[in-house]
Length: 384
Image (cartoon, rainbow, N blue to C red; front, top):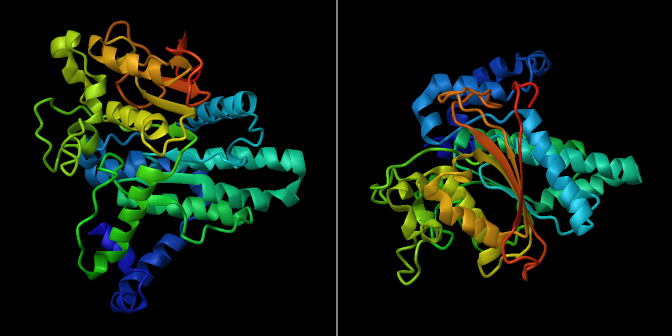
């Protein structure tokens, strides 16, 4: 319903019917001074941590919505940029030719924005301001993002459009590559025929499915949601795992890709795999390295719950990750506020987290199993 409302507001005839209410709302919003909000940090935290918590906290928690601190985003952008430049010769990083990036749970587009800003600073330092618009246009073509919550999706569109147009970019003819979609839905299923008001939304779902199934991606970076499901969930409407966990009814001969994380030796611990962040890891490995259109090389950088580092139920996941990458770096940020001893978290959550950054040089791997490097960061939140 919310998605349809946004579409209706762009149709002049429909807009005329509710013009009075919309005009009043627009005047109220226009009175807000964004600069004053920015004095207290990133203003988009209000959308995640305050608005959603007050408006529908159950929805926020069920979708694993967690605001990512700018310092964390900056760290991941720096790590990926270093690898792009040093290992692949992409010295303009996200503004370089062929660097197609995807944030599969983008929220309000904090990661794509940070990546583009960082890349355009490199462009300006190397070639001057005159080159920024051309490379901003390339970023607009090469940056993709998925989001499931309509409010965050709308904000992501607004923020990315402003950033790119301010930099002089020409937006892609088919529009900005930010899609309102559930990443974990089947990339092959055709959306149902909608009523008239939903036609544009269905067209967008088809475009998103095309990206999921066929567009090669060089970098996946972000903060996938965390939410634990029950192992006995049957694949109904409320189940989050969707295609990753249950496969596609139209392709009965293919096993669900999550099964590749399951090994018999883990026994009852396998229930711990039924978590959104695990599904996103599995989907990303498939997207980057396994499906028929995959580039077969590139970089993944995720900050997620760190339970997969040591938990016995995650043995198959760890094995699959080492088979997928040539090298893998783990920054363990701790953050367990429930155990003993307690450690400070970089998020306002109870779950320990880590940043994992993996690289694969080519379709044919250099190493049968990834070389894994591990570091643990201790201290206060500010120190981390």
